[in-house]
Length: 513
Ligand code: AMP
Ligand code: ZN
Image (cartoon, rainbow, N blue to C red; front, side):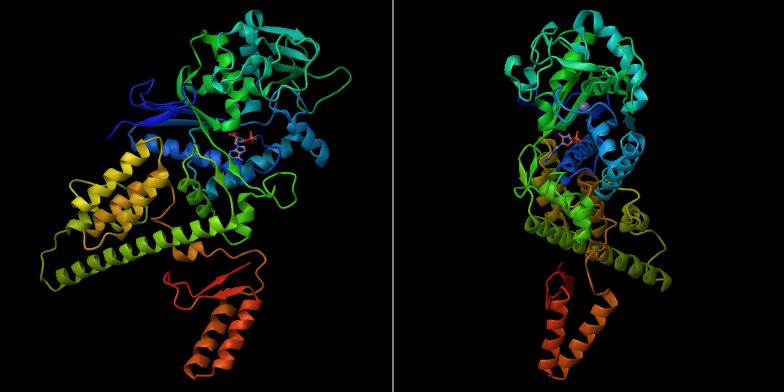
């Protein structure tokens, strides 16, 4: 298999991936701050990290992936300004932080599942690591930190090339507006935030610097080191983290291990999903989250496909039309795979008939060897042995694309070419599709056309009612009673049902809400 090239934000270049530990890939992904539902932009970051993990597995590495859950310490501003997001939400909702954290962590996990994102080896919960964070801070405090009334601060001038990842000058780094009195450098950040005198925080711990809570940047350094060891292979996050959060993590890692040490060999960042009407803001009433897409009748994997259609380093503009187009594309793939499964089942039953009529000996067919029905259901995948040149050509294109800094847009076209191949060994074809889908995560081997027909929450008509109306319409048309058939159609349209006569995808109707 060709070399895996990845874009390293540290060097702003494509580099060949070679692992720190032979045969392994260790990846850390900055997880969500669980003070609210994630929006679909946040979820783009995890689709990206998941795709990266799947490509590493495809390449044969034993993957250890860690995603953290930030349930303490993230302020409303990524630098040191503002309130703790968790404390703020808990006060607004008059609930305990622990309940808020549990609720939104579960909601995030539901989105992870809906988008077919594989479970990482570890979900590291920040509050589980507070004692480790205190030990870590103690180990770097003397040489790299200073204490102010509000907390323990990291002195960014004590490490070489602070902010190199951001390509920012330390004095005017973005987001450093609300200055803390006594800070030695504008970019210095709190690694421990003391509870102000006379206040009680819901989440606070004793420390050598007084009662308080850890800083957000400290969390990721501590958890990545604890679970993956330093250096590990790849650290991921959204592009906003390239500016403050990751430079700060790197500074801490340097303090711990020496100036040459950023902690991870590759730092990779996904670009943003953008939406111009402001619906992605968590403060807008109906904000764009995965459940909203489902409520509007979109299967969540259409959103995954939408993400994969763009390169992870490009901005991606969200639109409902774009999502609809992705859903139609997904349907075409699902129907293509369904046809191949039917063809495969036919070859199996034809073979069984020939065996029972003693026309062929009771030996397994080539297809049965390579591809059992169990495999078709998605349990096992893998192209075995030689396959037809047309199949191996698509596999080659697919592999070259994903090895080229995860070019999923091109990989998708290779998959579609493979699905549309005719008159080749269908078992091999299915096996190759399953291999590709294992990387793209569209769940093509299991999804059915029916699964993709998600009922919009606001729908006012049931499926049996629609089917009955369509039957009546068919009868009316057969009897050439066009007034009646048009009336039925108008009634359906009024109820939000689009009637699709002769749709090439075989959909008779669609709820259009
Ligand atoms: P947060 O919960 O705010 O820490 O964000 C979780 C992840 O989502 C981080 O990796 C962010 O960089 C990323 N992120 C935030 N907004 C967007 C967006 N609009 N598009 C893509 N990724 C985003
Ligand atoms: Zn982080």
